[in-house]
Image (cartoon, rainbow, N blue to C red; front, side, top):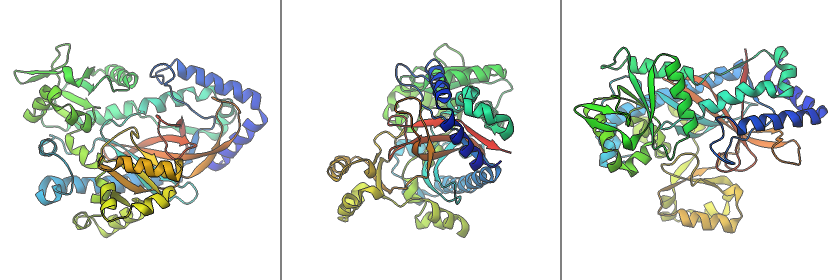
Length: 444
């Protein structure tokens, strides 16, 4: 049985067992509401009834995409580290540049990232959406959705016949994290791990899942607010007073730089090399939206192979600074062909401040674009996502409809590790809009 055949069978089964499927879907939703996937109140993960299923050929394709993309990342970061002229391509402050240039103590350029792509399941082609490094998340969301597939009546019916495997993303990240740490020059046998972020902005439940899994592996770990860490006598300590050996950084760089004075102890410890930071600030080179322009710059093309440049040309959406488009009087095209464009802040996360022209009228779109001028925005070619049929039992009327797909490729120490599958019936796929997340399985 192929992945496509299994998906079709699941759809047909739901169609002929609608009442049973409704009970199944509502039971799954009720479980989610009382699980780690509820961030409070009505802010919980929404899902659909059919999981994403891939065959081994597609998994190989994902692995190839990750390997090629990560190799490009390594070359870009290396060029930034050694070439002052290349650094000028990025709009980083002197303070951030100094942090990026600090030695990390280990060889891995980007220990963890999620490469989000718009993947066409029919022909294997794709376009990049964005690169997540700082704060890469949702590993536990994947885990819980996988865990509760046993509640899915259709999946239960075909599970043994399909023999599908799941991606493990929590313990495998801890293993990759420790692999990177043990390669660092000052690694100790039994390190104390601090999982750090601005906790008032964090997805705390996932943090505590990681804390628990570290401890289950015999590694002491503690979730910390980055602002409450104390650096004294050459030791960075958690708010409970425990000295830290290695940091799992979930705090995104933009938040750190915006609250620079409040995290001065953390910053000084990193500057002094008193603590191993995973990931180091060099990950910002890839995370910042400027990377979309830099990847096609002649200076980057000079350090990439012909094959790598062709890869970027084929898969990176056209990107410009919004204010640059305005300066060359190009906004009329953006207004007129609104369905072909999306605008994004140059340094954000969780799709904050992202707008797709396809979601708005011409009048609304023009107002939004005008409001984002002089606000450090980019305008990017809008890639129409691949669409698949699915059904939600979270809201009536219950009916199958087409959903846009966004595929996140988890990358641990440069290796493909798993898939994060998000779907939406709108132009933007994000939790703060209308995102649905589904479990992902693959057929061996």
